[in-house]
Image (cartoon, rainbow over all chains, first blue to last red; front, side, top):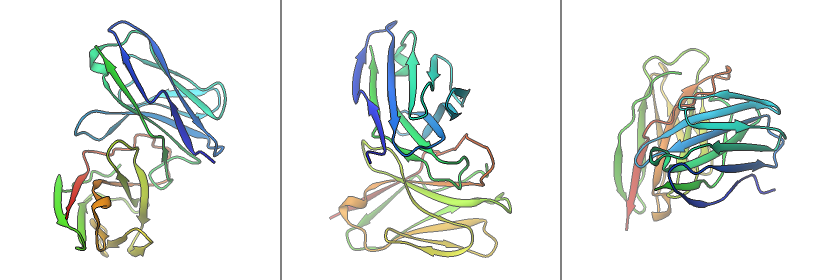
Length: 114
Length: 111
């Protein structure tokens, strides 16, 4: 039981390049989330999914797209990377929604956009 | 989600007890109080949750007064490995996905 895994762990992009971050969970959770964390700040929700085939915008969705074709995977795409997207990206999953429900986080992906 | 306020940082020494107080004056009747811990270069992890009075587990204790307008996370006998950021979240089981972690409280434990 690996929990939540993220690929890659670290990536350097040039401005304008595209990439996809992969999140996988083996807990059969319905809900999955993508957050970004900038230095000295808390986490901000980018996009989330309430089940296979569904996605929705979070707090800071601009510049990102997501897909959830399989229940266990949640992909985050950057179509044209910008330096402002330099951040640490965390994926999380939970069985139910809300603060009352525990979210399980992955180890993070560090992205540097030059 | 109820707005929360917690100190930006706290310093402690090994073996001491660390208490972090979170204020949530507009907590709603159905809201729970949840704390997460984030070590450097890792994702946050759930440590404790409560509704009222006191909750204790192997990691921490959570004290909630009767009016529930604040809560205190207590870390007994901290060690260097307890150095982390601690986040207080308040909300219920409604379909609100916008969990607000804020800046949290950075706890630094020194030898």
